[in-house]
Image (cartoon, rainbow, N blue to C red; front, side):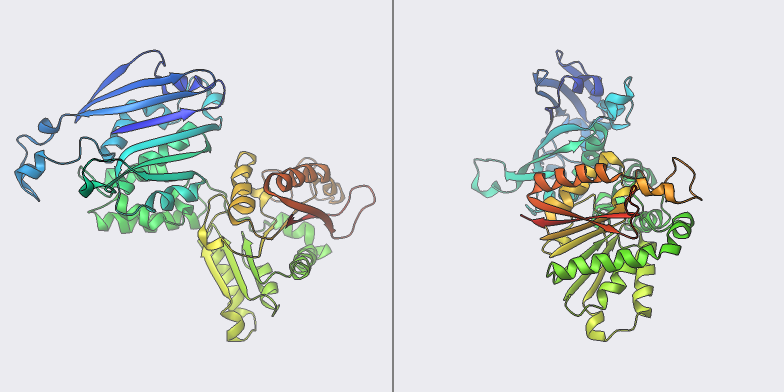
Length: 464
């Protein structure tokens, strides 16, 4: 089996520092099932590729063990594809050989936290569904290509693929994704699955798996042959999300401070009315409220008969339950209620259920996203879904001076990662519009101050 990782972020040879493997040397490492070799087919400042190749001790792996006669018998125990197909053995090798990088440990913290342009190839890997790689890696924001390995025997063509994924992330994130998802692609575990495997799943998947649309499928396949552990892990992931433990952005919600500041202006009501007006003006028929929280906007949109499909998503199960209860209390005919769909999702990851909508709304959402992750939000909302209309609202930081109860330099919500001035918001919106082929117009929400502007700023993106 062969794993290659290529960096094109200059200086690309930093990849060697992060992996603690010198690009100019071949290095070999003993493993319980063979030997791992690390070498660099190319290593320049423009492009650097590291390769991890595993040489199996196929005989030593099964000799003298009772499992040698399990399943297909002694012949199958010795004659199989384990020596060349990427599997859970590759995950073990990654942990043993690239353990420092997988754990995010580095002598240079800034280097370890840097997002790199990375491309990874796994080959060969056993596949039973050519769409599986896209299914598990795609929602993480990667470009995914899965192609059959050329094999002389016509009977075996299509049995194994070469999977290539490419994207911008830290090396630690990339290794964690490969560590967890390679056994999921292979569909087998070649060693005992116990409580330790559950802890590994949470150690390397805990900060992204909770919001993955295929988290239950991934968990059950990763913990194959241990259904009790898989069920417990799925529940634990759901609880982790609901309690806000996940490192993925929690649902914005509303802090008491923000509510108290904005309530006298009825700003939430005015914000919702402004968004609904923009959706109506755009002629949208299907609406997605990404980061719907407890359903304020959904309830307003549901009252509009022109909207034929209404989707509400949030990363928090707790917030989705609150939205569901809110909508149940909203008077409407059953035919109107049938238009509404709620499901867990995150604007950080591609989700096919959001594709094809006329309009996407990010109402008071982007300010809850860590700035390094805004690129992922942009690629998902403006690139992947490419809705005809995207409406974004966010606080205007300049207006905070009008709130006497808000200390200088603090944000309106304790979970806000930033708050933009009007100029900063315009720079971001114009850049996004140019990058993804939209035009953008700006509007103000709330009473305007001649100097400070309005409390909420809005951008409406339309396909150019």
